[in-house]
Length: 369
Image (cartoon, rainbow, N blue to C red; front, side, top):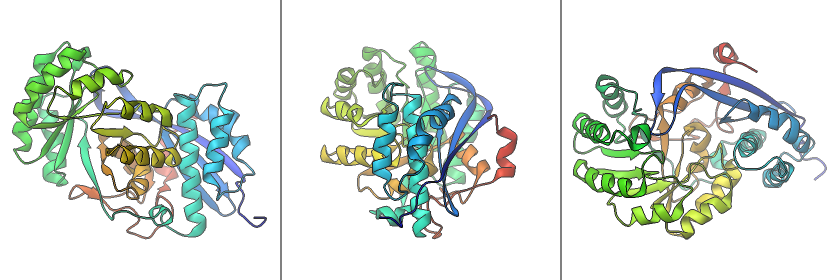
């Protein structure tokens, strides 16, 4: 339509935030987290999207995507998503390019909902009012006191009835400490709170199966990436041998990746990350693909980027209330959600789009580009 709103400008900013303590999982250690923000201007409205990714992601947006997006009909988000994916063909979609597409796609959906004066969940259509969350952190670098403090913050402070800690420390070479930390977590949270573990692909296949069976004694019900999700057949074999629900998919950068995991019977719950997989456009398709296989989906990290989309799919099990990202999103944005009681309610305040407003003053000290 000739009177449809047109995207006038795409702008990026990069922020790096130090962690509040040394952090590591089974296969990686880090001391900071980088957020790449994409802003889409359309008349008096600005849509915000973001991804947790290297600073080079902003260069992909600036060099390869901004020219494709600018001048497009702001209402035709799926059409723009397809154009962006085609624009990064020679650069290679998986990885940084997909994260760049994701950040802009989220911004476009936020922009469209703002133009219409609707919370994004109302624009997409809600399947539920509340979306469950689980507290996530429990880094392998934490000592017992740090671990207990974090777990009690979620369970006693926020009333979240499900929590997750990292295991497979040092690529699975500290298995006894893994077991001890899980036992410690169970002692802290009591017998009624759900306990999840995440190996980040750090175990070998037989080791993962052995550990999974042993953790049944602690009532662990979720075993995330017992081995790398690059090996669906191995995941499927472990799934058959352990009592926990096996989950994977956070490194999916395209819809076929999720199709391969599902076709292999590799997961009991599919994970997809809206800031990596191609944005809200592709995340919703991944959720539908999972539903067609009778499988739930869970939103990986970046809870405020996921929340509205998650409320629109009937098979969303929960969102990851990840320590680093919650801390950053609370610092950078006004309009953040409360997880008190173990769930979030996107759109309840009636604010348009994602309901987030960047606080420039609070974010500026962390800006690096």
